[in-house]
Image (tube, rainbow, N blue to C red; front, side, top):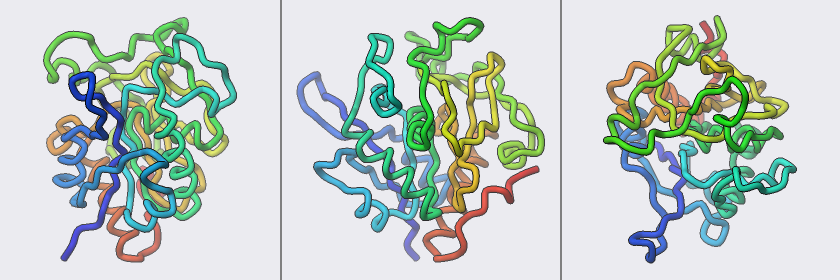
Length: 260
């Protein structure tokens, strides 16, 4: 019996500063295969090569990954500043309409870091270009030095809404997560439910209110150590269940059934 397919949104890179490539972190594929129980398929997120209707037909669900480039501020009505960093407008052109289409259809997605920010922008929200520059906020960026283990180590708590979706999924109101992001939610999209915060108030966990499918999004990186981390594993397991529901033509995964 074949596994359902999860399209993993890829990012553009230059190998050896010269050779252009679409790539995705192996830990994303490991989490989808080993924990979600689905077949990972890397998607070149560029409208020259793929279209949203094709992706919706080909894949049963989507993993919206992290990535160094940020969503272009024109997508939420703001001007570019130096603080906004690098951009990937080809990815914007695929992922933003893909999010809206998945919400409309009830097709599942799990969003991580940049993906978390894409979901907010797709639903009408905006972003701060640099969280650490805001009064009272901590530095959420990846440590510049150290091993991968040190960069992905657990660095702060996330507190979930009592009785909410993430509380129900995790079985706890507070969990420890890593943090490797510079931007964050400024204005929440009109259907975005913020269901978890960092100690400094930064939104860390959301879903789309009223959506018929799985739309969970997190600002941290649960793909790291996903098979063993007590926060990552239930997230990817629930996503796998949602993808199987969709692939089996069952009713879309009802996110409210996760509520505590």
